[in-house]
Image (cartoon, rainbow, N blue to C red):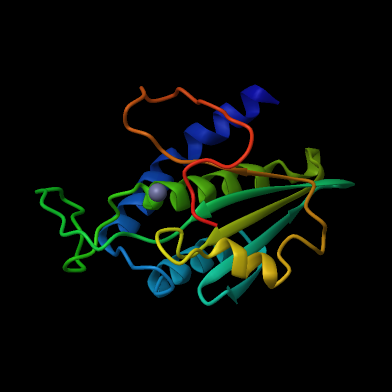
Length: 186
Ligand SMILES: [Zn+2]
């Protein structure tokens, strides 16, 4: 299974890089992630993954159902950018003046869509469900609590949740893990 996942990651890498750059060009502030949500829906539609949108405003929850019944694992990515002017000469520099994906959330959304591409392709080998949560407004007001209040932890009930944050201080390919909350507003 490890090798299959590695092969699928390689196969989808270029697509995920392209998505991340597209997201980087159009950063949006908390609860205004409309283009971001449209991009996520476009990619989920391409994968034929069912989802619910407009949860807590711009949030999206998608579900990949495995072949056999089992537990439900939630994977979460935050969607919003920061009110910072991008001062780089990057080819995919922010086109929204005064707004920048300076906290890697473009990478988080692209990464979760990449995980969706892989998991969707091996769903016949999965026992249980994968719930994909695209959460608005991590910076500032907090989009997780209103999404939970709208019931995203039910139907099916979530057994375990994972979030991640990119961190340029560590080398690529390295993953550091911690139990409990880390680096996020509720
Ligand atoms: Zn962040």
